[in-house]
Image 1: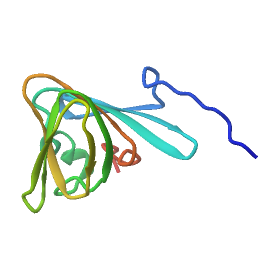
Image 2 (image 1 turned 90 degrees about the horizontal axis):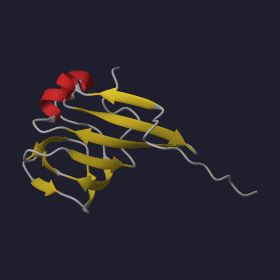
Image 3 (image 1 turned 30 degrees about the vertical axis):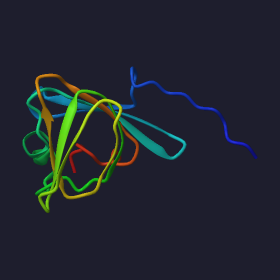
Image 4 (image 1 turned 60 degrees about the vertical axis):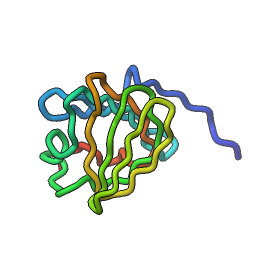
Length: 122
């Protein structure tokens, strides 16, 4: 039996999870057993300041896989390794990291794997 075609838009997400201090949001859509997110991160956003109070963990414990649509984000792993991502980059960020926006423009990305509990109060 074939599956059915489905369509949702991030313009009307199933859920919106705001970050602390208005520094952005995660827009979430779920279907077919998968949860996807569009993250909008404003200049000055940093995981350790704007999501850590929601997550309650010392570093981000979600694994993220996706692509950057606009802007730049730097990610530093707990072991000190660091990478900067920008428009057109596909990424995988394993658990155990901090992240922040680079520059004075917002960063927008699509996350295919690390969304189910991200920035969601326990």
